Length: 126
Image 1 (cartoon, rainbow, N blue to C red):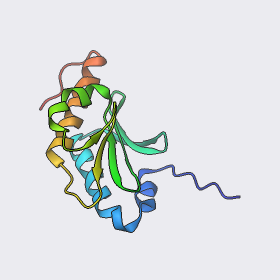
Image 2 (image 1 turned 180 degrees about the vertical axis):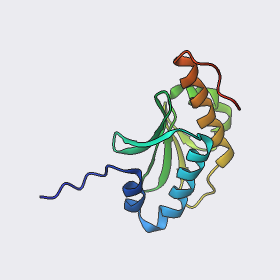
Image 3 (image 1 turned 60 degrees about the horizontal axis):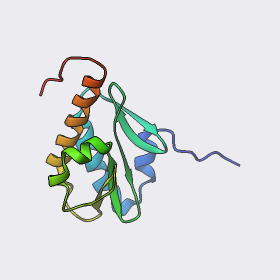
Image 4 (image 1 turned 45 degrees about the vertical axis):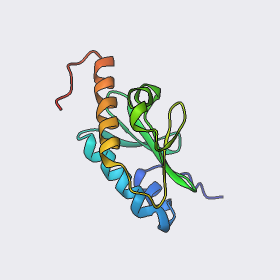
């Protein structure tokens, strides 16, 4: 039997149902633009970006897109994510709704900064 495990972000995007691809590509591009120089990769079966460690994971699900920015980011942005379904480490964005680009960008930048500080490096330029 052929192994159908998705190993690249490009293959993951191609696997997203056509009805949700445009929104998922928008989410992907927003994350990548917020983290210039970060590496795109697959981890735990989901796209992710890493820079001094994983910055965020993100995925497409049946009814929503999700980002997984670590509990610290959810705590830091708690007042800004109240309009979305959240858990300890996830924010869900319903299909068909506008992707909150500024919020996602701010969360990615927060996580980049957090990773740099954890690695004992100087602050990332804003």
